[in-house]
Length: 531
Image 1 (cartoon, rainbow, N blue to C red):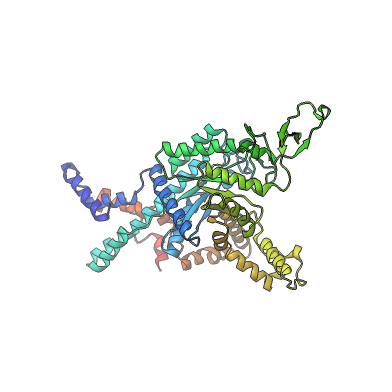
Image 2: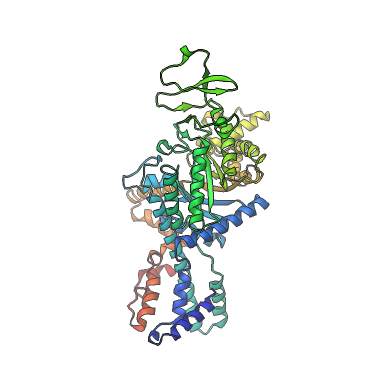
C-alpha cells in the first residue's frame, strides 16, 4: 500500500473506535511502513522473486551477474546494504551470503570450530533471522529520518520540498535482499536436511546451498579429505529442500547444488546400480579398482563390482573409504552438475582450487551441452592467493606467447618487488575483470566472497591496535577511524541513531505527545556530527 493509502486506512480504523482518539493516523501509517515485512516467510517469498527475475535477466544478458559478501552478524549485513544504497542508490543484483564457515568459526557455543558441520545447526537459521532483523531496522531508520524531514518541510511551509520527500517515501527501496544460506551437507540424513531447511526458510532464506559431501565427514571445500556421496543420496536431499520450500509456500525457492568433486578423491560408499549406464554405474565407473582374475586375490571383507564384463575390486582405505581414480575430478563435477539440475536444483556451485576462468568454463561448456541455461554461483574465496594465482596466470600466458619473462621468478611472484611491474599490473587488471569475465565466459550468475568481513575485521583491528596502543594513542582511533567515518559519510558514526535512539524518540512522541522525554535534544553529543 502507498503512504497516503496507509494513512487513509489507519484513519478509517481509528474513526471506528472512539476511544482511540489519541492515536494519530499518520503515525500508525509510518509504523506500518517501517514494519513492511511481518515474518520470515514474507521475506523469503519477496526475495525469491527477486532472484528469479535476476536469473532471467542474466540469461538474457550475462553482463547482469549478481554479487554478494559473506556475513557473520546482523550488523555487518546491515552496514553492507546501507553502504551499497549510499554508493549506488539501490540494491539491484546485490545479495548477502551466509557462510557456514563463518558460523562455525565465530558463532558456535563451543568456540571457534573448523568448517566440519560441528556447530549447532540452529545457529544458521538464528543468523538468518538476525540478519533480516538488522536489515528491517535499516529500513525503519531510513524511513524515520525521511519522516522527520517531511515534518520539518511541512513546518517550514515548504510544500515543494514536502512533495519531494513524500515521493521518496513512496519509492523507498528496502534494504531487505536475498540471502543465499549455506546448509552444509544437510547436517544429517534427508529428513534432518528437510527439518533444518524449514527453519532456515521460516527465518527468511530464499536460497539454500547444499553440497555433495558426506554429512559426518564434511570438510571445508578448500581443504583436503573431502568425501562425496552417490548421486541418489544427494538427490534425496535436493528433494528434501524442495519439499520444505513447497510446504511453506515459497514456490520460487532457489536450490544451489554444490559439487566438491574436483578436489574430493574419496567416497564412503559404492553407489547402488541396477543396470549398466544408470547413475549409480556412472558414479562407480570412476572408482580406482584392481581387476580380479582369481579367488585368491579376494581378501577378507573385500567388495567386488563388475565393469565391462570384468570383475573388479575397488581400492578401499584403512578408513573404510573408497578412492576415485586420479584425474577424474572434472568429469565427476560435470556429471554431478547435470544430475543435480535434472533433479530439481536451480543453480550450480563448483568448488575449485584456484580462480581460473577457463578452468571453470571448461566444465560449464560440457554441462551446457546438456542443459543450455546452466548457471553457477562461484566462491571468490579468500582461501585463494589471488595475487599469486593471477600473476602466475599472466606469467604462463606470456611465456606461451613467446614473451620474455626472464625478469620474473614464477615461484616468488607474490613479492612486493614485483608490485609495480608490467606483469603485476596486467594480473591486477585480470583480477578486476574476473567477475565480468566469469559471467560472460563461464556462466557465473552469482559471485560471492565467503569470508570478507572476517578478514576486514582482523585487518582493521590490527591497524587500530598498533596505533592506539603505540605512540599515536587516541589519535590512532581519531585519524584512523572516526575522521574517516565522518568524511566518508559512514552512517554508524552516529551510533546512537544506528541503535534506534531517534526511532525511540519518535515513538515516545507518538505515545506521550508533548510529555515525551526524548534523548535527541540539544545536549545529545551526536549533534556534533552534523557539523
